Amino acid sequence: MITLIRASFAERGSLGTRFLPLVLGVALLLWSTAFVGIRYAVRHYPPGSLALLRFLVASALLAGFGVATSKEKPRRVSFREWGNLFVLGGTGIFGYHVALNYGEKTVSAGAASLLVNTTPLFTVLLAALFLRERLPARGILGTAIAFAGAAMVSLDTTDGFALDRGALLVLFAAVLQAIYFALQKSLLSRFGALELTVRSTWCGTILLAAFLPELLATLRTAPIPSTLVVLFLGVGPSAVAYLAWAYAVSKMSVSEAVGYLYLVPILALVLGWLLLDEAPRFLALAGGATTLGGVALVRHTNAVTRR
Image 1 (tube, rainbow, N blue to C red):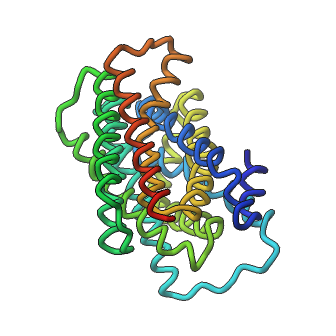
Image 2: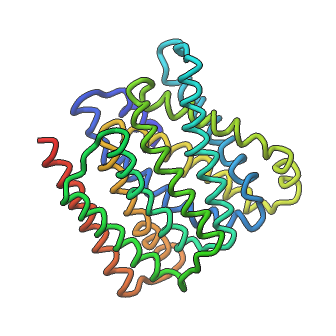
């Protein structure tokens, strides 16, 4: 998969979009596993330590990938640009993951997936306000339909949830992720997808270094299975998925790209069925169909708008 992403970054024009569906699909599939992984690992890892170990792994992999694929010397980054990169890392890496990890101490994976899937609504609003991206009425309708479907799926896989502090933290994580997506799009023209992903991830990891003493203490007592789950979160949902997502966003509008995030609860439902023998019930199946319909409407709307 890394080889495929590398080839995709090297392409331009129509060739560069040939692998877009596959790359986007991989990002969504990996992110669908993250909620379950976090819910498991946070039993033994404090939220900050979990985020730090995860992104130490991701930062190392992304830096190695960047060095291996770069044919030019890294360009100089201005003080203002570094400020933007740290804002990007502070929202999408530090803030989002610490808030989500804290939230999943009390909120189930399904409920967290529902709350995080409000991100596209916040992102479309931010893109309209600051990036001047216009989503037509049919696109807004598709977004609402997709969110309703995601809610149906998430509610079917849980016993419901209360809006306690954990749920509010997950909702706050969704707002931070929306800021990350909107700001990411505005910086892609200056840095490119690969360089922006590597630099912003490292900036977020530097901020997470505040949890280093806690992580060192946790590593001595944490069970091996939990540590392996955190390492997987660093490789899959972090390094590979963030890289794939940055490439996808570089090829489409933010409003269009985030519409696909509604597929994450569907993918999580399928994974639970295949791996945990959790057969979906009628509400989940109906929600899945509703989500797919909403995403299709958003995609069709953006395709018509670009003509």
